[in-house]
Image 1 (cartoon, rainbow, N blue to C red):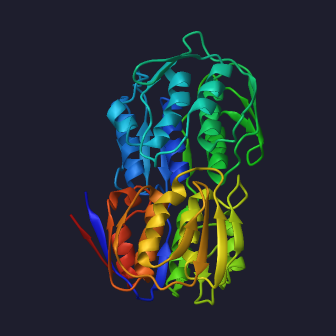
Image 2: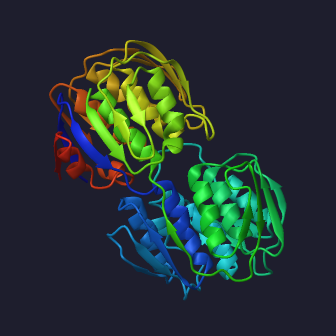
Length: 419
């Protein structure tokens, strides 16, 4: 395992271009299983999670060209197994999306418990119920779940009890090969779900309602190869924006659409951040930060849970008291309790709520990454703190942020990756 040593207290400056959306890359790679033809994905982020998904596809018999670049050519001509490597599945929560594609392609799937995320009560119940509605028989074994659709999948009308992003994507991929029309209500409508809908359309699958909570999918007996360019990662763009804001820096972030950033930039503006947002650039200026009173996460297009950890760090540098409420996931905020030992004034009410009073002068210390987003938040805290910090297991953060050390160094940060 490696650590990131950060000597904080410096203002940053410069430009940074975000990669393609991580949360789109994983389902799009999984969807390549639906066709024996070659698919081409462009603007793919070069991050650890993508590398694991590539390895999973290869474990199933796929050929992947271009690894280590932003353009991947994926050919799934020889997919005969529905059982991806359990060791790799245990490293990636997103591996769950292979279930829908494998059931559609080979008629069965066997999946070990997906891993890679912080511990929480995140189940795959929504995924299993959706696949069951489409005709898959679900059984639970000693090492995971097996799904059998040897008799084929059929269109269905379903209501998702949870507007799960990956659950919606799993249902979409299976419905793409089902006989007839499938209607999915209470579907997730995040931009990366829309990207999957667009990719399926390019494969020849009829999909209506992308971007809404009701999707109608007419299955196609054959799916052709497709080409897709990923949209910029708005979570990554927002993360760099918060890094600039918390360090009192002037940063220009490019590669992301303004409308995708709006749920985050609206909250940042409430906290006094001066910024300019367009499809050309997200420009962050030095600002006098103030408390937002209350920040609550929600389903798209509400404030995203993926950015709440970083905004919690931002609140430590804002004047006044902010209550941050992430009702979607428990335990995500627990990782930020470490900020107390850095000098932050915060009170962890429970697993979903934290109260932060600022501004606080932070000091460096040893920090422990628990998940991608809280790990990046701790990097941001280390950048603003006086003295030296060491962020442990920086590989966790690198699962979602490519070339982290070089990008920070280019902005003027004093950082070093050490074994």
